[in-house]
Image (cartoon, rainbow, N blue to C red; front, side, top):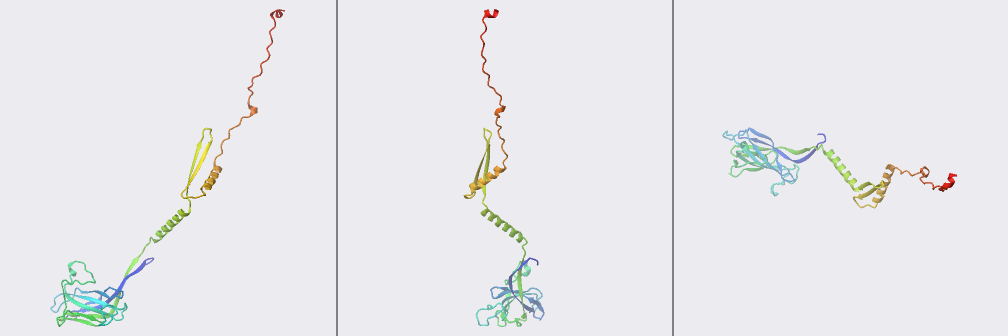
Length: 273
């Protein structure tokens, strides 16, 4: 069975009966499962003899018996015939016999616990009354007009109905459920943040970096966390190129020299001398 699970669905009793025809020939022998109707396993059902039976004239016919079984009978005159205890302390079976056509050859499905009496005739005793009798284990009910007999044997068997179930996907389902619970727990205790970073280069060539944050829930630590992120990004940011400063000694002197004094020209007479 491996890892399969077995469940008990129902259980009950199956009295063993023997049916004989008018010539004493056994036409049916076996355990007949009956259906419980209460917690004390008061049971009801039908005994169907479909083949092999002939009446006193040799004509083929079918027999049917309505059965009512109690594993622990309260006793005659002690109220209705219902079981007082589930165990086989005082088993009694009440039978009512019918003969005719069970309609099992009509091709229609039938309930094995019910008797179709639409084409059946109930047996009558010598006084003309409907034949019905309570039997103890080992007792026999004789059918009228040498039609045969039915015996409630001393052997009462038990039957049970089981359900076998196997669910190979239980491990995967359990793992999925654990993973889902772990994810839900993480979403409850891990604080999620949304961060925006924008870098804008100005006209002077300087890049200005702006940062903003949004929490899915109210938290006073958001500014601190944003500041820590800014420090981490600053440490990883590439260095900026420094603007070279002019060396005053390397600058050429563009100052014009002062004008020299202009000498007066000599008089023309002196020049001729």
